[in-house]
Amino acid sequence: MLDPTIRWTDRLQSNSGEWSGNICDFYFRVYNKINIVERAGSGVPNIFNVWDDEGWIEPVIEEQFDPDRMILTLEFKKSKRRI
Image 1 (cartoon, rainbow, N blue to C red):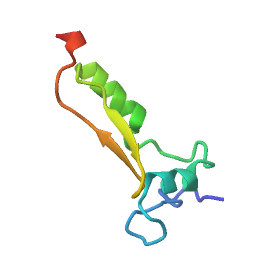
Image 2: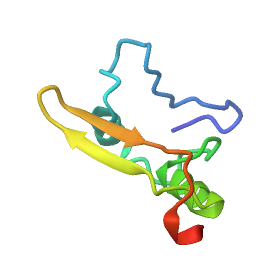
Image 3: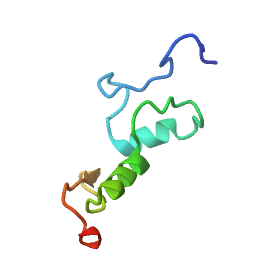
Image 4: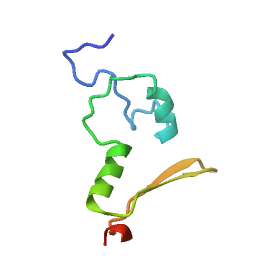
């Protein structure tokens, strides 16, 4: 049980050596923790919303193998549909 008086008691840090830093590894370590996140940062849906609000080209998420990786491409170019 988490202590409600301490912020960030259940934290996963990329430089701790406890995980690879891979986004897929992160997902599988935290997906069962519904409503624990503080929502202090912005997630992928927020990124897509901001890009849409600004009229920029929609972000692209690519999955690659060998080596395994996820790539998020963000362009600061206006979408043709809004010009």
